[in-house]
View 1 (cartoon, each protein chain N blue to C red):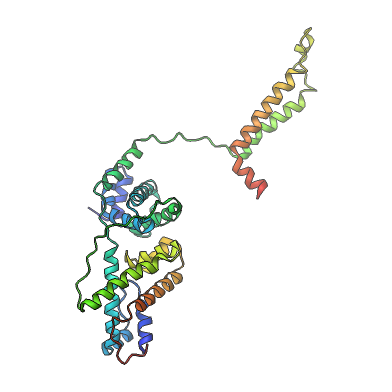
View 2 (cartoon, rainbow over the protein chains, first blue to last red):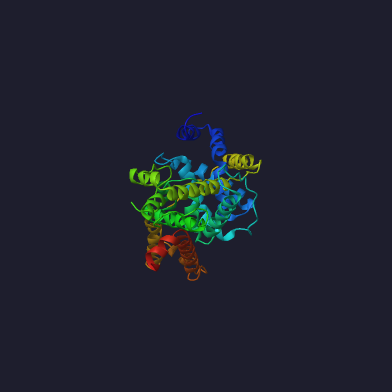
Length: 184
Length: 151
């Protein structure tokens, strides 16, 4: 199959069934975004459906200036913010969480796992708008520019939030690094 | 470059951005910074992986069914929308008509007939017509009126 843009052109010219290709390609990420917003599966499913429906209805407005992925996330971001008030209570979600291979003893591993949990907790305390902005960086691997395009938050603000989150993470990891002659 | 400067530079890097030369030089000679960066990279990678969730198997089907249903729904009938200006034109004629009734001879035929007193009926019909027009005018142009007079 061709690029996202080519698929969209085909969909707009009547081959509507091809939209399923785009759904298949991005449903995982949009669902994950829904989980980040609402912390429960039911809302995340409703959210995913709504994002893809909205995108389908607005497909003719997609100009290809950004990637379809970014465009879809923009729809998701603003929908998520507007749905925020109607969300159901948070429910623990099972994660497909495989810890990457690494060196380091059990103590280091323990510190690292704690750091991940602490980072998550630190992000949870931020206002929704900025929390999701950081999730876009840390979870979805988006660039500063993409995040700014999606959220309408100035790129400088995005950078400073990511910078602060990384500094905080470093604080959380204190104890995992044997400090040598180091002028930090 | 100090370790603090090196870490600050590392913190400010974008996704996939290569290390600037000065950072690379510093890291190659500083085991502590190397260790910090390894730890951070490991945690960030693990955090990213922790954001993967198994999607419900029925989700794709659900989304596509919703889209099919949307396609099957006939598009809403196009609404005829008149600009406020066009709306006002019949209103002006209506008011002119009402004002012109006393000097009009249109009703003279009726009033000439014995027992046909239109003094009550004509204002009643015209009043009802004007009120109906006003109600529709306000209803269809509410947003425009709000913008014009309330902001």
